Image (cartoon, rainbow, N blue to C red; front, side, top):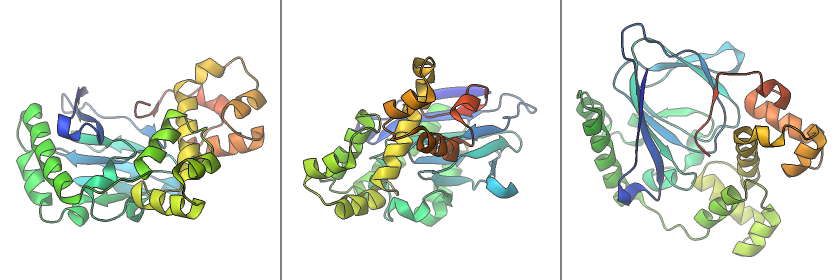
Length: 267
């Protein structure tokens, strides 16, 4: 499997963290089933070869659209290849994606939405244009399109980008009450802005951020008791900590060590 990362153009770098491409190198180079955990971001994916199969809870299997957006997730999903794959993925910062869409992010929370529902006038053209053999050219096509979309839908941010960044920088431990006081907003005002901007509430985003921080630095905490770990993560007790961890990942913190097929966006 070939994998390559590309930095976004300067005009997109405030909003987009990374652009990456994964591609089969030969006919029987399949992508094994992999668990994808909540990561607090939106990604858009353009397949130029076969799409993936997505596995949800309850045995539900869905083939991904040829191009789609996937929003904030509150539970894990699993994906696997369905043939010879090749795709471009654009990974937004948590505060970045809503500047590219007319509709609020909450409209596709916890699910995928085909890009023909979001950009109906450009969907087929973009898929046709990336049927080239050169990945640099593919990335350039996607970025030029996103610059055009950004110029059309860019919003006035006010305090909401600052709020998202404060939670992220504090690794999810910044108090929501303190955040409201700092930004001079009521909780309801903050919640409405979060829902419109990233699709979820500030409390859920904080939990997701704490979860990601722990998963990326789990070995830093391995000599602590579960109760100490819960307190470090900003929880009142061990039970709530384990409950959230299992809801996000399907695993207990101890079981997480035993897994070797879990992936995250870089934190």
